[in-house]
Image (cartoon, rainbow over all chains, first blue to last red):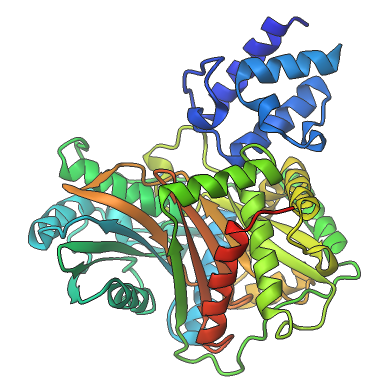
Length: 79
Length: 436
């Protein structure tokens, strides 16, 4: 799976979690309106879709800040 | 078949119906709550009253009464057209403390009739004011109440128009029994797992509860302080993990202040509210309860103001949410609706076997988000809910326009006023201290 494909999957899922909001790849997730419950929903989705349990990673902001950064982080872990 | 077009209670509605019944039986007042908006100026209360009256007529459901259908499922019965208003109360106070005290009393006043569920209050303090919607938790949940106020604000501003009164309908959910039983089985297993070797630490409920009120302490942080708290939460609990961070610091402060008064035990057991609305909630999800709960347990020894503990809370909350307990509870509780309300308390206790809960907890950050209310600027949003008699104490966080507020609610007599002040002071200090 390419980084761009991961980005598209995340954009789609975050849009669903936020109720149809347009999701920009470079906008911080908290500015998109994602809260802790929505974020946990996203983490659960990532665990199911990519088999990655990111909650154990410490959830540092630098790895999650935007869709693009998150997609890169997932891409690196999947390699 | 007559059941079509009725608005049935879901399982969590029935739980709240039962809690309301138990609260009324014990204290004389039901399971009410209140959302308070602080405003930069008072509203013309006569004009607001007239508009509110017109608004409420669009929602005859605000005069609902619970009845049982022939199939035993409870449903909300409401008039074809709403003909009565909701009470609008206006008071004057000389200070914010006095205003909040007036509002705190308002949530402890029972509604006049079984079909009354709302009350609108304004307390003017000089050039500013607080307005509140006191609501019966059977009719609205916290987010629903905030959405109700927001919709009224839009109606007042001419931006919300309904051609005819809105009549919510909800199915009876009297099918897919196997799924509900399986959900019930998973809930029961989870409760057994939680209760294994568990002696929860909690405050003692006073023996005599008649006419006891709920008292509140509230604290609001300005934008700078809120941003600092948010940074600390991201740094310790993880990015966007506000709810686990707030829960962790609440436990730390709770143990620090009430440690000696708590029952002997080895665990904190905390029910956490979670919103289960659809992603685009419309008017059908404005009224009644669209939330569920999950229960978290932490070893008392682990409760420390440390990064390790905060991370643990994040992980435990993640596991609880990803395990789908809240959804299972919502499904399984549909089965409880057949039980008469007087027996539900026994059923709930049997289900829980947890020997008490430590405190209730919630974090609401999606609700009222307009910066104005009926022409006045909104400077803050606070919740003051009456908590279920067990545990009798609750810690509730809200966020409005980036500003964080906390409410500590407690049953009169469960702790002293000084202890309440100490707790809120301690919580503020834990939130401000750097966690190492």
